[in-house]
Length: 369
Image (spheres, rainbow, N blue to C red):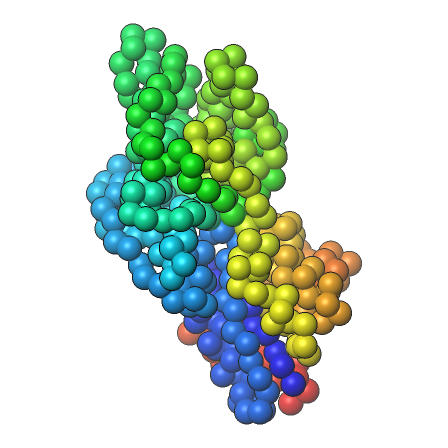
């Protein structure tokens, strides 16, 4: 028997690689002869770079960059053996870096641009940017500034736009973009299809979880609308494309200034990891994440994995710390079972400690032991 284990991270507790190892050990506790293929995954957010490093090897390239609050931090991107650079936005602009009082109106993606520029200037043959878990709402203007783009106000003075100041942009000077980026293939791994602004845009859907109150959400959405109108007037660029709302609008900058191509994050990862080949002769696919709900099944990791397993006729089982608001009719094709390790009443600190034991018991039950 072969089982492919392809979990995403259990956010705030276990990275995907650790969950995969726990799953592998639990399977071998049941039957040591079962062949386990470990493919920890990410849909573009937390653990995106690590899932490639764990599969292919490579190195973490250290870079000094700005965090979302403009503070200098040591971060990194992944350099794979084939010279692909994997940039995880969350490692420079992630919500976990914003501190206890995050503010998407002032947060910047500048550090992400620093990572991209470093990779381009140090021999990368292509760059894959994973979006997810951002603290920002600056439409990627910080990212672009780090690449050499100048944003000028009405007096012709350069400034660093953030979520609250997008309407101050009067002109854009792209002449500082380096030659190293001019023909660089750049792929965006993104699980979001939201437009930039409006009822389903970046601010109204995501800004509250980044620290915004209702008044700030309204302001941020108006700022994004203003910027979209400016780009349409100045460059005939439509900033309201599907996916423009990802990572506070970062896809806008990546497409506008770097001609980046958007791909569904989980599909990018599964293709690169060789998931289809691994699952073809498998008896099961085990996946999972910290919390499973309707949003989890909206094109993210679990949904994408189940869909790909279904194409090969292989049943997929998802294990989650908690399952909220889901019934079996909500499951995507291929997801045959979803198992909650804990109920909502258990404190997170206790659940984290009990996860290895509960996961081992749950997998034994699924395998009939």
